[in-house]
Amino acid sequence: FGVRHGSVPDASPRRNSLTTPLMDGMKFAKLIREAGLLDDVITLIEVDILFSRVKDRTARRISYNQFKKALRLLGEKKY
Image 1 (cartoon, rainbow, N blue to C red):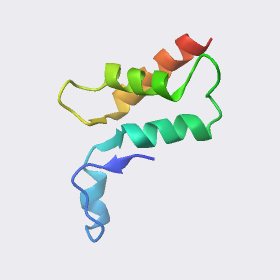
Image 2: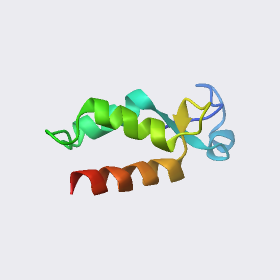
Image 3: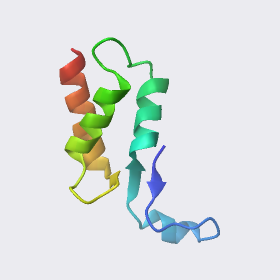
Image 4: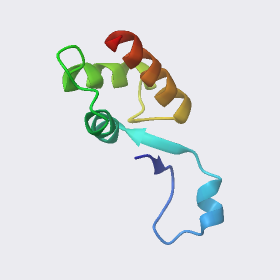
């Protein structure tokens, strides 16, 4: 679900392995939806709010560490 930052389709694999994987809000919401985590407590609106809380102020994507934080917050909200 993540996208390598700065990657282009014809770039060498070695170059892609050195870049940081990032995830945007749409792919994060898709992951949560396909994992079956949506219910009355966790809605797509709640997922969007949670994504906004963990990302940097001007960023559009989150890093792996921010993704882990988002999953932790999602788990706390759900359970």
